[in-house]
Length: 131
Image 1 (cartoon, rainbow, N blue to C red):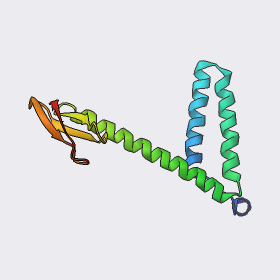
Image 2 (tube, rainbow, N blue to C red; image 1 turned 180 degrees about the vertical axis):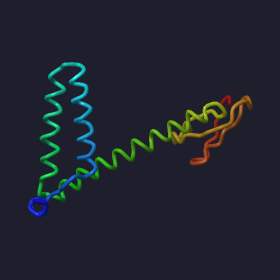
Image 3 (cartoon, rainbow, N blue to C red; image 1 turned 30 degrees about the horizontal axis):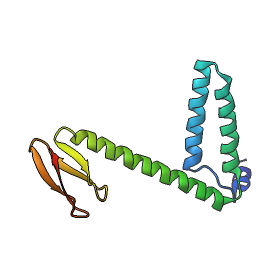
């Protein structure tokens, strides 16, 4: 039986990170559907299940690889943005953040120094702000 399944899946895409995400999202939709008793969540979960199995059983591996790469890149960018926001919130107590009026580069300066002249490290533009 195991060999038959292995032969059936040979040359197919299989489960990748996007399929794993879709399966978790299906479970979330089904739980929301149970507690909210709204049929739209059931419908969305079924459509996502169909799409997930279509991707898993697809023989167009290169196309599925591209889709998975787009998802992985999107997730990576979201994590990087979230980490940047988290770090900035943690530093908010000791630093002020300004954008350079010329190049829009973000500049971090320590708080509590009154009016200071800030030099942008990217374009060397100087501007005066309160710290």
